Amino acid sequence: MSSPSSSKSAKSKAPAAAKIAAPKPKTIDVTGLKSIYMTPADWIKIAPNPIQKPNRASRRRNDHLRTFNETHARVYMAQYPNGRRCKLDGHGRSYVWANGLSDFIPRRIQVFIVPVKNDAEAEKYFRYFDSREAGKNASDNVHGALKHHSIPTNSSLFQSSSGIATPLGYAFEIFNAATSDTTHIATSKANVYDHVAAFREQLAALDELADRCGTVKPPMIGAFVLAHMKYGDKITPFFERVIKKMGVKIGKKMDPVFAVEKLLAERRGKAREEHLECVAQILGALDTYMLGNFTESDYEPKVQMQRIMSVDLRQYLTAMKSKRTGAGRGKARFTR
Image 1 (cartoon, rainbow, N blue to C red):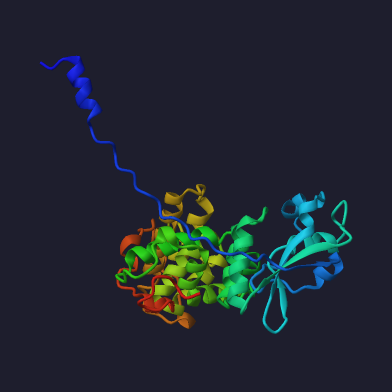
Image 2 (cartoon, rainbow, N blue to C red):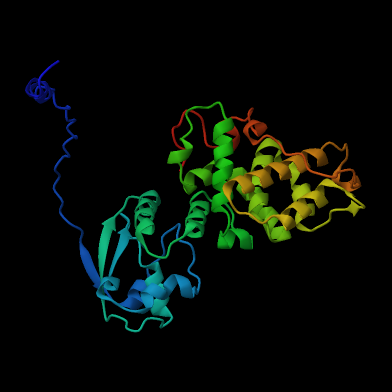
């Protein structure tokens, strides 16, 4: 049996854990940004960033700008080689000042000029400021991504971009899990710009549907995107019938359209699992709907269902490849 002193000695000789040195950052020279002074009226005239969502008279969004402080008098502006200019931040301040909503308006503001080569650089800087600016939310980011990828925003759904981010993110997860193309960006590293890039064709079709029919609930958004990716435009009439409440019920039996209407009316939870189960059931009803051998002009409801059978979301898009999304192959990130 070893003595306490020998035990202590053994412990003292134990090697210390090796420390891993962090890479030393490089030192660079910073010349600083040139700045000029403008009146608020002149700043208001500067063009918005190419992907900035049009400002709405939102009390909630602009409350923090209505009480003036000195930081409001500093803004950032992109300047192109040809002299063209656009805002990088300060869009909300333009709105507040133009509409007399601030308690004080500065006589002049300091405008820092950020040289950019093209729209892509201006958008990159905008996203940096956008992520820091108070009051920004998911709908603003979705709208910016739609504009960035030149997707139409004719419908009120896409103009507000509200309620799109979450179902689109879930749909991206399902697509990413199903594809055999391992070069896709990992779901955990993707952002809303990647989600929109993956579903360009589907979102353009969704905007057209929403513009024609009106409100599209979040589970319908996710289901539409996935179904359109798998089947194309032929699924649109089913979703149109659901939105217009054209389903049929006789006794305890119903057609697939009414089954989805009932599902959406009874849906209460907004948790991830409940949302995905709702999407799986909508897609199950669509599969039943498409079993009928008909053209839309001679469609007649088949009132045979008593309950919806869910699809397996993990298997729904198994055969899909990235080329269907327009994202391209052999790239780690979706085209921006």
